[in-house]
Length: 84
Image (tube, rainbow, N blue to C red; front, top):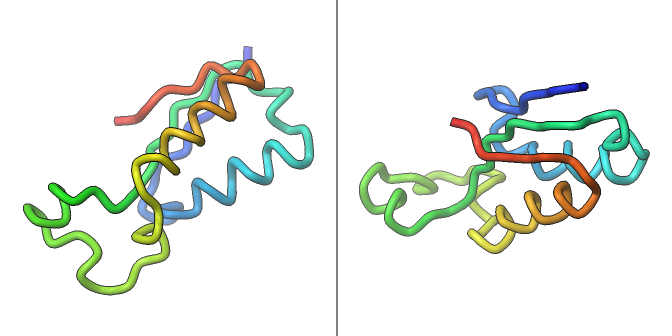
């Protein structure tokens, strides 16, 4: 079983590109389970913590985009769940 995690300040926002790459090159077939922290512009978090007040690449993503990551991975037989 292969388990990988995608969660880091260095990756913040790049998880969309990472998952795209895994799917495009077939690497996802080597992964059984994935813990992934998906960032998106959540209105409540924006209000409470002032998220996306300065330009950040991941601020362009919405909840539907975040959910699509999990859907794509799970449809490809990767057991993906949110972290933390």
